[in-house]
Length: 362
Image 1 (cartoon, helix red, strand yellow):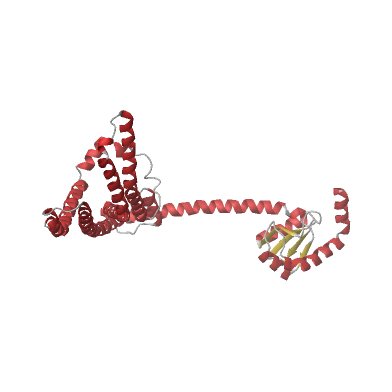
Image 2 (image 1 turned 180 degrees about the vertical axis):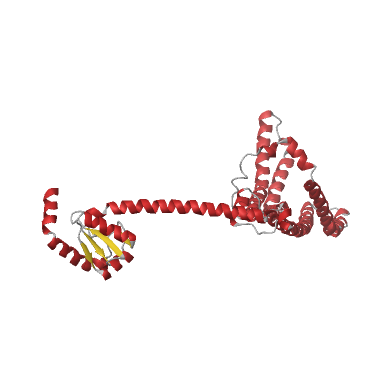
């Protein structure tokens, strides 16, 4: 029955998970972003608040204390505006940097610092007004509104007592100096913001857990989708296998073309065959030009017989070279002595042939 209804009962495959990440479909919560950004801005304000307050006090005192001396001209006003912008920038930049860094960290932690390549592409549906209206009046937007109202209720419930205590403080009933006002504002705002951060943290944890569960459910697969995924994966593996066999065939043909140029073929005698070539002028040590087992070994011996390449049976040497030497590379240093004996015998038996080749090259 579940198969007929197409229920999603299977866990997602690795390929589906990777596609979801590239499309930006992963668990993320705007509440986590809000909490981290608010916390980053609050921490930056705590560290830079004293300096910011001192700068504002000096600026306001210098401006208001010499207000009667301020010339009112276009050039002076322009200079005052520039100084004001510099002061505002100096006071604001710590908070801006703190919130920006916190926002990047929040987004990176939720995305595990992975980029969604498909999600970054232009999508007309994101800027289409009709699609925007549909999203505004959809069920998801209603859920978002309800969640927002619940957050507001939780925040008001946690901060109500603190706000009442602040409003009942004697500072509102008696004259105090400016330093006492600033201290009161800093302490009161810290208490309120900490309560808000706690409330939003609880909401963010619950919302992220829900988003994680919802994303996991959305990525679940039906049995038909899983079967199609397996078929596609097998098809890709078959294509890769064909390409690998094709490369092996090309390497084999290239290897067999080098057998006529070999100086000797060392055999097992029937299971293994290794073809060697050595040129004193261009090579430091003998080099393996071809090797093979069973059918490949038979082909190497046949080509060597056709081109009158000496074939020597040496089981231990053939096994060692087949195991430790690679085609196109020099033999291991541990086999120099054994191979030297084989080549010396070949040169003695075929002295006339190698003498003719050397005279032909010179």
